[in-house]
Amino acid sequence: MAHSSTPAHGTAHAHAGGHPLVGHLVPVSTLLFTATGLLILTVITVAVRYIDIGEFNIWVAIGIAVVKAALVATFFMHLRWDRPFNVLVFVGCTLFVILMMAFCVLDTGQYRATQYTGNPPVAQQTLDANAPGAPVAQRKEEINP
Image (cartoon, rainbow, N blue to C red; front, side, top):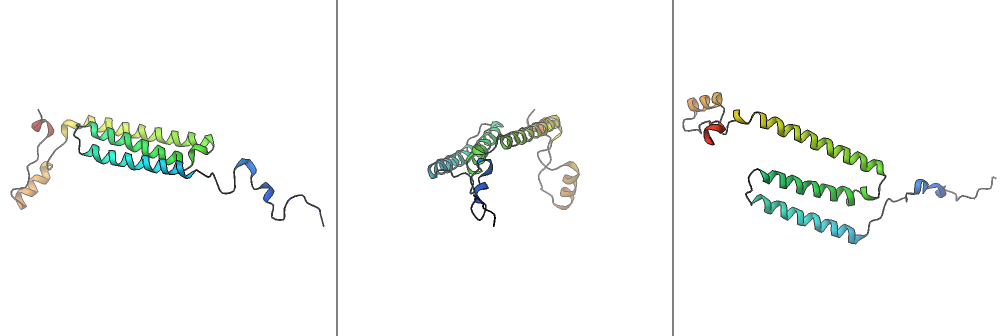
């Protein structure tokens, strides 16, 4: 029988790479502070919905959502204690999502003058024939000159 200095089940190599077997243990206080922060940001998100600051409302809501997503990824998904490559992938994906949203916003701004607030004209003709009294379609420039 060969003599081995490792235990019977080979647990000596279980910590290869410096990572524990069960993952990173986060203190309960950190998790509670993070959860409290997420709850506070949720209340702020709901409160901002009732404050009319025009088209800026969507940007405030997106900003709060980004902060909440960062908290979840950093502490609940253990990204803070993970390998730097995973942080690079997360940041890269986030930047690509922001880039996609920017292109979508640019595209909607291009066609803003032709958007309708009511029904499109063909749909309005059908509604007038089948349901008199339906709302009339108006272009945005007709409403806000």
